[in-house]
Image (cartoon, rainbow, N blue to C red; front, side):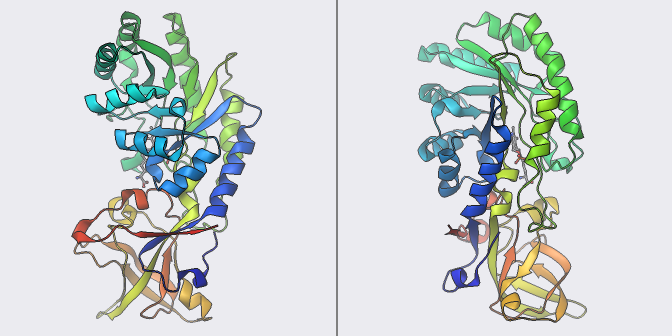
Length: 384
Ligand code: LLP
């Protein structure tokens, strides 16, 4: 991605800087990899719900994967067709379910047998039918950070495979429910293709079971999870979508008329965004130096919450041709010890006022921002 210092002069920081050209190139690459196959991407809105980003992705003809009534509304406002919205989430409220039914969304991805019963009840009251998909917990370890692993047995997501028969019974007993398919998601920031291969095998087993009960699987949703290169974003600005889709092309033969959906989030928007901050102080401690920037965990929570590391660049020092390097603990202004971006980071020698970029912040950056410490929501800048 390109960050031009001239764009930044005069702008208030912290802000999210979006390279819209990189976003478009990423979209184009995904489109190319899917072409010729009955594949569609339902973008995982949770990764970034900025209206400009949503509009660009909707404009590419993608659908949306939502996890709350708020996300469904944002997706509709951005122009995603209701029929291409899938709605997952373990705790959909009655009001959210009613809203989805009234808007005619493409599917409710039910995460429990209990939820299926409530969807049926609400659909009945509304005098409408609801398309439902079973989100099944496939019990596959994606070998990623324990906070973002979702597909192993003991976690809260999805219908346990052992309760599949109960789920089937609810849809066969309730004519308001129109069963359309199966949904899986095994975790996030996955860079090794093996878990996706295992997922394909599991999907085929479960499909056979569902079909045996007389249900037709029109849609197979393989979830999201493809990772990005946080260490070297400029070396790999676009994830390896070719290999990712090849797994499904090879290992998941589709029946005639069947569609495959995937819910890419991070890999679609991660590299197009950077959090731009300015150095407020270079504070000399006894044994270390702190680079105190004006953005913090309220703007980019990933380092504090997951111990994630984002590549850090001093754009002003690069522009002035600074050669000397120094080590800094790069921290935000928030009153929490966890408000640290990186410890002992080797960087170009930095000064007060310098622009410092935290790269690969397009996914789960702005969307996880908060107003903690009564701070403003970070600003935005779009480079077209
Ligand atoms: N589908 C479902 C059902 C999901 O739960 C998720 C992400 C996705 C798709 C999109 O996954 P992706 O392609 O982005 O990996 N805040 C964390 C990530 C949480 C992911 C939650 N679910 C982070 O910053 O690393």
